[in-house]
Image (tube, rainbow, N blue to C red; front, side, top):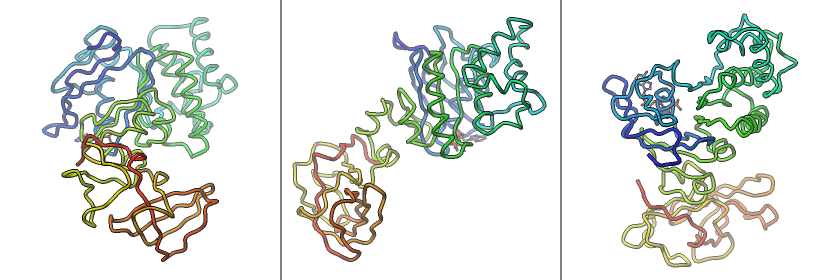
Length: 341
Ligand SMILES: Nc1ncnc2c1ncn2[C@@H]1O[C@H](COP(=O)(O)OP(=O)(O)OP(=O)(O)O)[C@@H](O)[C@H]1O
């Protein structure tokens, strides 16, 4: 456990019967951090969250929160809040009553309750909706009620499972900003699950990329975006042209490939489409697809290396379907991968 760690998962293993869902997971989360658990379906994100919330007992390892071993502490005694994807609001209760629910269970009444709930509603911009029933709210407003309901309990850690996935694209952007604001204003440590890399990159202080029940990479959005450690992470954060390096050469379908620049000592290289140089270079490809994407134009090239995806400024000359064009994979513009496969 590091000195700065607030929530520590130590060799955490989680299983459903004989199926191991998470294996020997080590993770240090700092106080006040907004952490994203990112990964494809089935990688163990939700299972990890469930165990932090106390909804699932680990088969191995420990969980410490604020210096206390909570591995066997019941869910309702952990000071860990959980906002479900479905919000799980009470439809027959008003917004106020929904937010007041947990506080009342703790015995809070009268002016203190009134003040706490009002402050909670204010923090998510819902003061004017206190008397509405929750089914009469939009998805974004329901999400805010769920957030306020958890926040008024003053959890040490708040867990959010795919918090924005039920919202349409515009609302998702709005709630992204809202979530970030509430988190920064309250200083509460938050962990949210997502399989959307754009959301993780935009929101999180740090991202944990999971694969097959284990951590593949932990880093800031910039680190994950610019320096993926493996082909798996590269693929997940939008790199398209990903190649292994073996015996000092790029492994492609087309045999030895000459690139401008010396290959680094690495397990692989990955280029984002916009890192590909079109119109000049030692390689040749045939245009098999071209699409206009606003400020840029995206090309699919059939090449001796396999399919290459490139993206260039839309103001550049257009290459027609079927045209043969020169291109380059500049080694200096590639991300070096430490692991491959
Ligand atoms: N109730 C269950 N019983 C048996 N296996 C389960 C159960 N829930 C999850 N699993 C398995 O545990 C593994 C991890 O699942 P988990 O739900 O944590 O993944 P996830 O990353 O949250 O996926 P998603 O993004 O689809 O929610 C998967 O292999 C899944 O099939």
